Length: 167
Image (cartoon, rainbow, N blue to C red):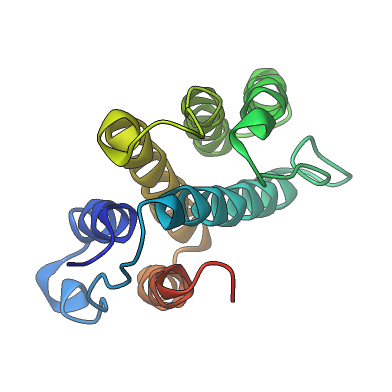
């Protein structure tokens, strides 16, 4: 059975793609013990924060609130949420970048709600929300780049990494 986190991310990205690009998207894979889903969620959050940092850098010069963020555990969610909200309120960011920042804030808020010792069934809604927010950030950055093929390439890179998140 494929990873629920990988599947949610795959499906969220695919919803934003045209049929011809959807066919370029790899299948969701990865399995293993439930504990790996937390690793996958944090890895996906790291990618999303990196994409948000790129979006802000495209919008304006200089450092931004995403540059030094980590997403190694649910405890990082509060810092992500705070930095993303600060960036969303920054008037020098364009509206599309502000939307990306709001998605990153949502991701951070959801990540901090994950219970590291709870069973998968209890965290599944949060894992799905993080996957959805990450897909939103990826697709929005692809639109800013005006490069829909990049979305598929980047999503496939992430899907491959989600197979073995600690490797």
